[in-house]
Length: 187
Image 1 (tube, helix red, strand yellow):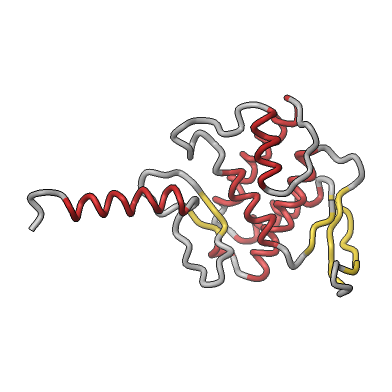
Image 2 (cartoon, helix red, strand yellow):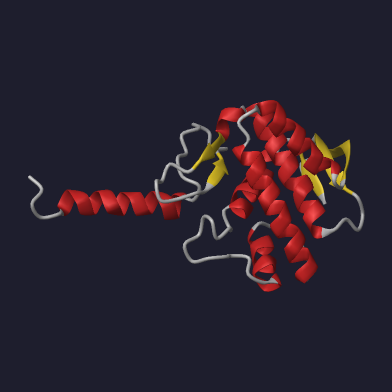
């Protein structure tokens, strides 16, 4: 796996989405309940994970817990140290390679035959370091929904994202506000 330094949004999105698969966040329970669910998650995020097994699932769930700790860390130096440790799990490089358009780009690779969780750790760690460098630690946030325990990394251009899963948490709040405005007895 080759991870571009300037494509930090991919790794940060993976970290956000992985953390928010937890039953702590999802009312429906564990999203990654079995290796098939993990395979589907990886496919949705463009990660070739082959056919993950039970051991892979356990290691990814452990990584998910570690990522949550990192996203909740309030000290940016601790965040950088922890994200660097993720990259060190199986990262090699950096190395300079040409991209598909022939431009030179910096990449971090993963060691051959690295376990799935370690490859994901390198991808997420590189993304978190990129966000920390380019956008700042203030982009690591808790979901604004009072009924959600989610955390996320805001990689939006404007930096105004408020919800871990806008289509879920943001929509819940919008529906609740709409119902409150339309309730009988409201002046």
